[in-house]
Amino acid sequence: MNCDYVAFEGIDGSGKSSIIEQLSKILNENKIENKIVREPGGTKVGEGIRELLLSHDYKVDPLTEALLFCAQRSQLVNELIKPSIQNEIKILSDRSAYSSVAYQGVGRELGYEKIYQLNDIAIGGFWPEKVVLLDIDPLVSLDRQKVADRIGSDKIEFFQNIREGYLRLSEEFSESFLVLDAEKNLEENLMKICNWLGIDKA
Image (cartoon, rainbow, N blue to C red):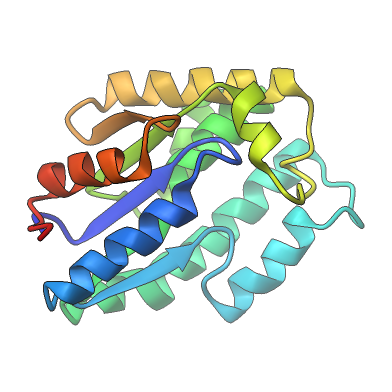
């Protein structure tokens, strides 16, 4: 694998979890130690914040939402991601700071640049080396969801804006992003990811 920290991005229902689990199995078969982390969450502090962010029991202001994501992300990077990489463990992350740029910056209309800068401070500039963006029509992805959390149950327009935010990110950081059609066969996309990351898929 030609990087230590790869994130998987996409709107709710794009299939990130399935791809990550399959990729982790391939890495294990290649005897490449890896760890799956999720956002929000991943640490004790992060999981507590996750409850606040995703539960339907709370009404969260957009800026508060953005700041809570930054807080859990700062904890995750410093407590789990950096130490794992130092111990030569590859990180497969279900979401990253790029999510906030798309979701809170564009989706919540807090500002693309402002939320990017806010997250850059929170993670000390420690962004994923590579990002797999699973691009999909929101009408398709939202139909896939079994149970939608607070954010995942928002209006379709919200997710259409998020998708635009992700595509803007993929253009701005084209050297780091691999954009895949999430409606394609999982095996087909998995092969493309392995080729891109320099992983032998037997």
